[in-house]
Length: 288
DNA sequence: ATTGTATGTCCAA
DNA sequence: TGGACCTACAATG
Image (tube, rainbow, N blue to C red; front, side):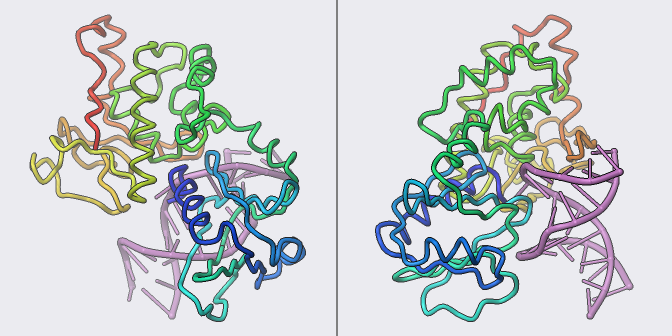
């Protein structure tokens, strides 16, 4: 769940629930207790997210920085608050609801400068208004690294995880091993625009849905609908299953300790190298 | 009831 | 490069 859209969604939710009023902050588990005491009872001024990082601003130098990692979760329920169950790292209690944070990789109190430093290490976030795709392109277009690596590099693009990576590459019919410097400018422009639209949709719905209506398996009969991860996808976690476009079994390999999924036919680099590139415009990212 | 796996990142070896 | 983190859920018995 926690790719960039999840954190932006949480930032919006927490702002709606808690911003502008005092919040009771505690750490039932204890690991965040000393820091929680410093913001307990203060007014939450605002929240924001950059990539997979979430920030709760209680003051210029009182910022709670959260990274969910692989299995961190925020849960919420209406008041009254129940006894904490399990390892609750941080509990926030507001006027109408309370929220429990569990399993996060990072939950720490930082200064404004430290928060800025975290953001300084991050690349362009497609969900932020201040994102500059030109800077990401500058990195990509001079890198020999494969796009599979570059898209997951948070210092290049912040917020893309394993699902958006696989789906974006598929939607643009790009071989995951294609070196960044071999990507054409027009392809990058199309990918960035598509990524912005896909991730905004993810913020809105809370799911990652990438399959165009014309490829809906229910309609084409290519495969049964999956929907396992709260969304319909082309490649992610579909190893061995028929490609929703061409029927070829989806391939799978371990790439830098992460699972990489792609369609060996639709995303074959052979066409491109053969120089017929102009003949097949990047797959139109019919929005989902 | 138990086991396996994961949408992420850091750190030690 | 492998383990740690230590949750949630699906698959297995």
